[in-house]
Structure formats: structure tokens, C-alpha cells
Length: 246
Image (tube, rainbow, N blue to C red; front, side, top):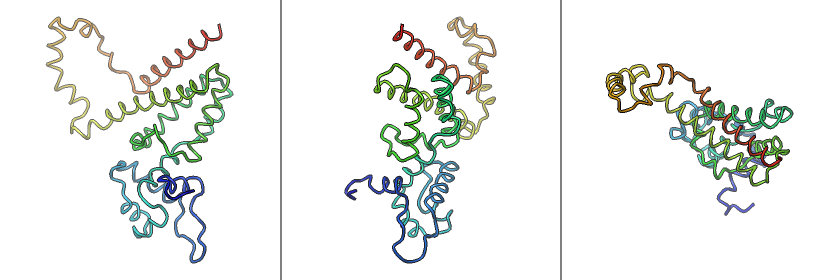
């Protein structure tokens, strides 16, 4: 592959791993160790805080030594993104339970991945640098829905719809989770400061639909919200499939 290809270094590392040294001592680090350490740093501090210097310190090597393994942060992130995706046992066995259970399992696993690795939401998933885990993940998705009466292009649309829904709901959940530390206010304090104003607004008669809501309206969990929206998507798909086969 030509090194003029700006993705060549990433693709070589993703698909071939580190080259075997022609001579000299065996490398002290494995690619897996480097990627795992990068993921741990990003999980704790975010993608912006991740640097080759911090990564080298964590691994106990010099920064220049680290560049011999991974040329830059760009290639490192490509490796990290591919490492956090991939078919799990639950997803590999889900297709036998039907397309609906498969898509449910797929969506919940993606939600779990993004919540565990929030930095992954900052990656450009619309133009991913595909490695073996990413390709295996997409291959399993297509396998799980292979019997649906959809064109291949529509199956890719479905993959985008499901992941877009997951990303959107997780972004909202993470914003809520981070709100306390960012505002120095607990959720209870935040709403208690607004309560007098909202109570006055509700009794003014200007917002009749809001005023009629019971007190527990906003007590739902993020998982309940996620499942409600996911079932709407799957119900819509089911209705579309029924119309096509009627």
C-alpha cells in the first residue's frame, strides 16, 4: 500500500499489527497494551486530554519510543475506535431469536459501549477507518437482518438509524450525568431554584397542558426512555415489513 495514502499507517496497524523487527531486541510493548492504555486514559479524561506524552508516561516509556509503535494520536484513535466495537457472544447468538431481538440486543450493546467509552461519541462514525472489529460488527449486523425484505441500501439505512438513535439518546444521558460537576449543583438544587418560577407559571393559566401533568411525569429513567424510543423504531419497521409482505 502506498504511504501517500493518508490512511495507510492506520490501516496497516489495524489489519497487520506491528511489524516484526528485522533485527535487534524484541519490542517492549504490544499494540494491545498501547491501545488499552489509550482507552483507559480517554475513559477517565476524555479524548481532548489524551496525548502521546501522557500515554507514554502511563506505559513507562519515552514519548519518542512510543512513536516507533504508533506514529501519532490520529492512528491511535483509529485503533481505539476499532477496539471498542465488535460482536459479543450475546450479539452473535441473537440472530437465532429473530430480527427484533437481534436489533434490541444490538442497540443495548451500543448504548453500553458509548456509556462506558463516552469519548467514542467524538469519533467521526460517518467516515470510520474500518478495522477487523468494525467490519466484523457490520457483517454481523447484516447477518442478523439478512432475511428482512429490505434492499441492501435499506439495510445500511437501518444500521444508520439504529446507531443514530443510540448516539442521540446517550449524548442526552451523558449531558445529564455531567451537569452536576459542570454546574456545581445537584439535580435537586437545580430544579429547586426554578420551582417558585415554574409554580407561578403553572398557576397562571398560560400553560394548561403542562399544568395538568402529574408530579411523577418526569420520574422516568434513562433506560425507560431509551427502550420506549427503541420500541417505536422497531414497531415502525415491523409495520413497514408487514405492508411489504401483505
